Length: 234
Image (cartoon, rainbow, N blue to C red; front, side):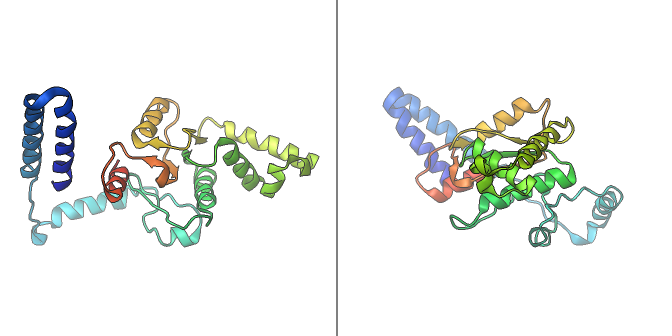
């Protein structure tokens, strides 16, 4: 409530300079009323454990008879920690200091899910560029040192042939690994819009955004923690 109230007064200040006091007062009043309605509209539900048996058992048997597919990445240290795997509708955040191979681990996770579990993966590299990411993928998939890919004169004819053949397997119409190149900065709404545009022919099961600091907030806030929360919610 405090956060939204602060936003409404910021809007009031901006609109007052353009539309005058009367119109900006009306907008502020409507916004505050909407906040009151939203706050009082939440339903408080008391759950009685003694009477929850039937509903709980029904859902339990549904999950037992129709188990969901647990998507894992075949990296034991990650899979053993995440008991539910990369579950639909969940957000998994990997945190580490600069220079600790976050992009490498994200790439390995995505490629393992794509290769080993036949799931569509969309990778959004907001740092490093499209060409650099392709080089990393080719090096990883062919077990060729990255510096050989980066300095192509070091590659043998056999390695060149192996790399060319690698791209052929990426043409499968069933399961695909794609990059979404948006530059160095992007809003969540932009990423969502691009996914919606391609949804008729490609629906990612896993979305990897690399990395969060380069995701822009939809609305500028006075505090970084509020912007961070909004980005994660979006």
